[in-house]
Image (cartoon, rainbow, N blue to C red; front, top):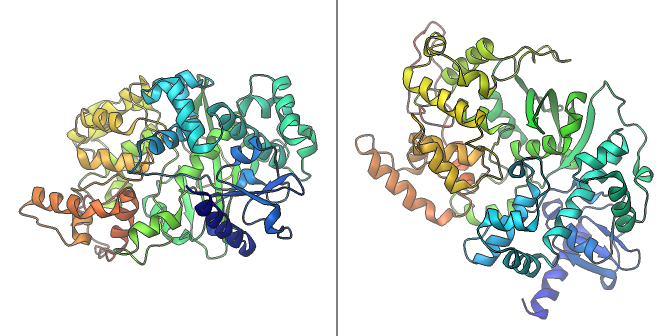
Length: 521
């Protein structure tokens, strides 16, 4: 980029800053030279003079330049900036490296080194450092340090967790190292970030998660609401109090952490208020990451809309629904193969009732956990068959559970997409549609495309019941214009279809429909 291009970009950023435009929240940060503080574009303080502003694409760049995070707008609340490209190999590699540093899942509770990161990407550590610094202006270690410090800052401000616990779960090896890094970067002791009003132990923990508008809350909660399974989740789409709650189990450090969470949307402030049970305190950063993924809070509508609006002009606020647990999503995807959403929901509820462990929560709707991988891995065909699950689905469910329990299969945002799709398709009963659907929602791959999906083909006008292979090829060909955001194109295409007609109340038989391979998990 030339100096003239950079000046024009910064001038545009300054206009967004003056307008406090929430669409750019997290896509850049402003360092103010007169105060030494950096802010989000939505910060409510008086707009600084243009000559006092320096603009950075990432918080790590601002901190590397010596700026401290604003205590009012709190940069740690900003949605992450997730960039994807199909044009430049170095650009792709640098952003994939950043994505892996953002994801704690691939590292098996260990602190990732540059050498490990390079091995994961299949290049040398020297090459990773070079392309990372060229793209972001900071080293991978500096980037990771900023991520950890901002995570700790959020926990200090929003919770009453002990300083020692905050240090450890934020990724620091010791309290001494954490205190030293915090003072060096922010010129404050960690205790000075404490805020009054944090919920005491026993009442849950509340944190705030930001997102960029527009966001169609009704569509997101409607998607989850149609698929909710009794006893493990509930969705309320009230105009004034939209929220979703569920039980949840996360394995970390060789321990299973079970609890509940409640996510409430605050549209006026473009935030999700997340309340988490005390039993999940030790894994709070991981829970936050998974909730952000489940509700797709880090999506960049401006980039997505530029690619999709010519074909899907009415889907600006639609996001790709994710999941808190990739293993659970995979099982539910199998249950939904070739049947209706309602039928898949019935089978899923029976599965939870039969194999899910009981759990006490403050919510009468939440009484069980989804069956653990080790439990379903040992489930007999007779037991699954009694629930109405056919043999082909039985084999697929058991195979998925065994692969996850034995850690042969990783289903999270940090997993290798290509290798994971290939591994899924090697399992019995898993075809391309199911693998792509899991990649879209569990692996958080923005370019997944289940070309064989009947509902998708219908929405695109290429459906040929007598020649499904040709219909899939035509859908695939049409999708090239939407790369690398085809997952979002799928969601928008599904949204254009009319709601299927309801069956009469007396009908007992569960029949397949043209909606049979639509997303049912």
